[in-house]
Length: 266
Image (cartoon, rainbow, N blue to C red; front, side, top):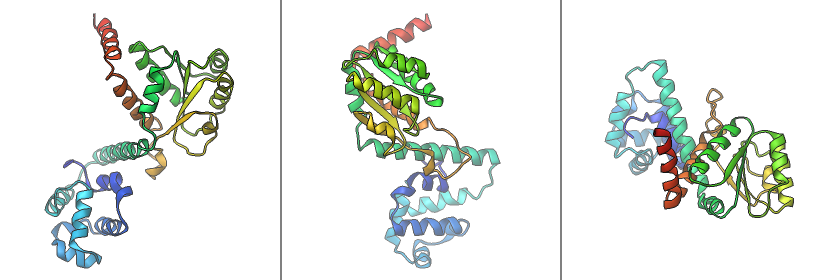
């Protein structure tokens, strides 16, 4: 992680810092030019904390030691172009989003969905707008494994298919807000036929939770506090990458996937 700037490390791990460690972070941000030249004891006195707390702070941000922290902080004094600054910032946002999503996934394991997929006759993946693109990608991956799946991205097709599903089938609803009217209506219709329903969303206590059997939460952009960064699908794609990886541990699915890819190469 040596290439990652202090600010990006802070973006990634800020949620895990204690009150004392956040105090250190604020001091460093406000004195970033002088801190690299402070001894750990001098720095602790100025901040009003202990050297051991500073050491823990450095390790939480994945520096091996205070000395490495100082050394790398010095190199950040070298001016970079605006493009480089933005690229570093976006990389930091990616890392923060993925780390935060990982911590959320620990509450409900993605393996629950993997098991449902394996034991369902047909998988129907719902998504509108940009979530429709994610739904299409997810269905494509499942089909390559030989899993019967389809992505539905318009309301008419969703409603028409919902009435034809049964208790052997599975709906996976992808919705940022958890309030997409077309998806909620489709799930309610399918629920009458005892279809199993899983949802992937970024909002807790949303309407979609009232119609699902299992719900998975991912990280939203609001944790970044930057209205210039817009990627609503990153955490969803991370989630389906995890599902894909779990499924491909199955030899049959893995062989099917390879066969499909081989046909394209011929």
